[in-house]
Length: 137
Image (cartoon, rainbow, N blue to C red; front, side):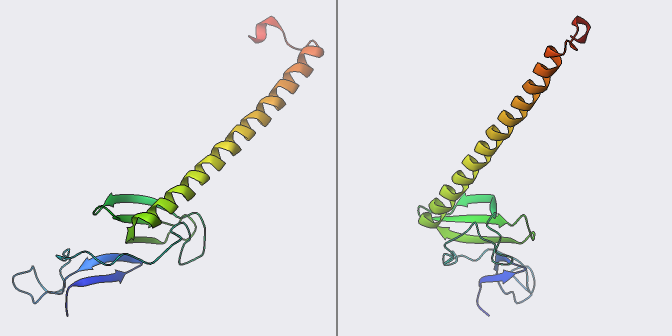
């Protein structure tokens, strides 16, 4: 069996088949001398197991000028994977992550404003009823 990339429990890992001697024993895990071919996945934010669109990177590293090794995690089903992806795919994933971050910030600002308006309304009601005293501060 030739050394190569194989899928083990949802994560692509380098596996070099050993003969039990010089390479550390049969089945020892070592990185092959060559890089794996890039994954053909286009939508890194979508979980291949459950279809959730909230997959996020756990770790990433540049392999060369046009490839990235990215570890991904799904928050719904806890599926994890590691793959080698081309720069264009990683750039698209980065845009999707940025859009998600922008959406979260917009939701946070909306929630903060709603909470502040409700607090001001309660405070105004208390002031109008003369229920706020100097001792309250």
